[in-house]
Length: 293
Image (tube, rainbow, N blue to C red; front, side):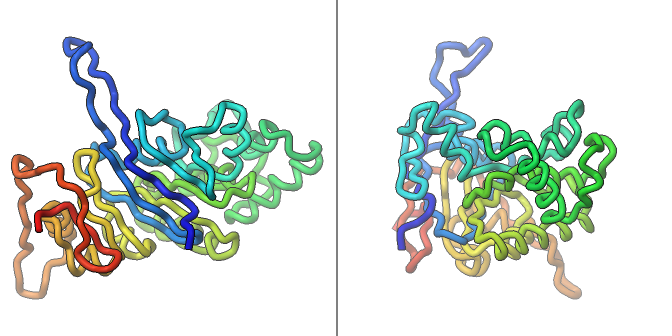
């Protein structure tokens, strides 16, 4: 089956600043390749600074990649002109990590959700108003709340508003960039359940970026593990959690709190000095890791 999203050898380099200006650039994303099937939730995990968010934003061209390939539904996103990219954006959207800073505090939330429809010139004013009301109900909010401002909502409600905005144009692919990390645990479960319900109802495909491994295991069918801009392991949730092959993946998994009765929590330390930039090799069908033979 042809994947909906196919990322190939994606690279993003940032120039060094300050005293190091003019020196070698920093590779935040280093030849990353993976694909996402239609209707799938692919998880991208790793510690802070591993390149997860930069990868997600490069895929959508919110940040311009240095090189590589991003094919969405058969079209190379990186080859699109500015006008073509603007038209294509209705098919792929993003939900940002921080529900507090991602919404304009000076706009009413109904206008925030309507904005993509205005930009893409969708329907009449009445059509857009009806669509916004529908979106509010879709994400579990009351249509009567449309005239309020972001500061009048809780964090979980704001993230629902951000999700409604992302869904306004009926996209098929959504990048979820740490969508629940800024929320209380009880609220996290509500938002995650909403995401799963919407995926089933609307046939959405997700790239789920997170550092919470337990959450990733719960909702992702396949997982990619990133370290220093590189993918070091890719596989099904069972492959990664039960048959981890890369030392960094094992160290990451050992950080999950799961103290056995009468036992001690054993942590595996990963020595960053031992890291080598090896290509992924096949461990078993659908399971790859950047390790020596």
